[in-house]
Image (cartoon, rainbow, N blue to C red):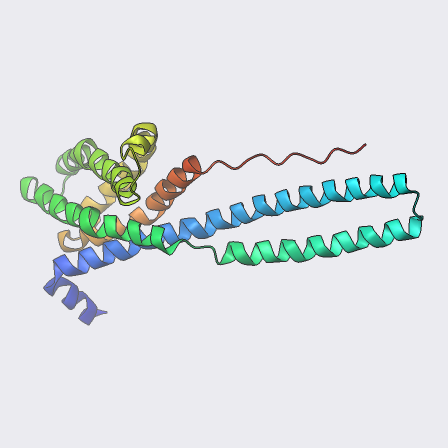
Length: 239
């Protein structure tokens, strides 16, 4: 542990940037794992509704054709078995449906902007208002939320939209910035107060990366959830 801390102190820039970027990208992976499960369940419900509708239609056809009740039960059992196999397949696909290109884009935004910006920004704050104390910490937290928070949130939305080559790279930012900013004020004010109070300046960027893990999960999920509309599943009509 002491050796790792010595290396960290010897190479503060590299350690902070690599650590921050790793945590930043991990947040998208976590978000995709969670969202993938939800998407899998939605697909499964859709498949189930389709199978139920097909079963109802098949039942009506059998009735019209005047086939025996034994044949009808056999066909229904066959439909159930097929449905179970499809549901299992959907579940397996949802587990392995990580979009690695998306995670790479998040990592690139974290590496090229967020890690570097936070490293130099936190160092600048410490140079302008060195040390602790309630007054200095309050000033640093206030400036962080006034300047750094809107800059980093904007870079997240605009950067990812640009990498995805969206027609309007500012569309996500215009729709989601204020919600994201207002949501983060309480969380980040508290976490940065802890950062400025207890964490040595040399490790503050990677600490921000650690507390950014949950925050970036929220941003990635909020962005993905808003971009992907899932059609509601209609229950089958029983005649």
